[in-house]
Amino acid sequence: LPLLIGDIFASFLTGQWIAHSGRLRPNALTGPLVLVAGSLLLWRMTIDTSNLTAALDMLVAGLGIGLMMQVFTMSIQNAVARADIGAATALGQSARAFGATLGVAVMGVIVNQHLPPHIAASITTGENVDHLGHAVRVSLEHALHPAFLFAAGAGVLLFFVVLWGVHDVPLRRSVDERPAA
Image (cartoon, rainbow, N blue to C red):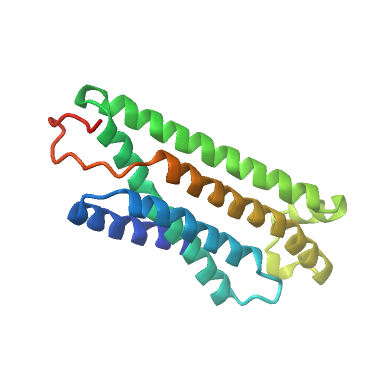
């Protein structure tokens, strides 16, 4: 829930800022950096981390995601002719869904590879983490750390993709305008 709240809040503010400024690139560059910060905050959590701290860490990661969501959709829509906006948007959304699925799968593999087999079996029973034994919770903590570190690395990679791939072109004020070169 904190991740989604951060995502929605940042998406709202991003939309307002872009509508006012007409610029996409600042948010496109800030989003991955905030996401990396959120991933590193999640990476540093331990079994002694309070629920409030965990929620705030998730909120930061959500803010990073929210700073990017509209930016990438708008940059796609701004780059194509009116007749292609629907297809380009659909392709962008499909790529986002594929990337999210791949990211979750990779993070799941990382966590599963770092869990001892007997611990993995006890976690998949659907038990609440608070009711797991200390040893199981410590094993889960150690298995989650590399996954969040992977997420931070992916955010750094995304920053460089945005740095070289997203240009600050003027936004169209109407779908009838020609896309910028």
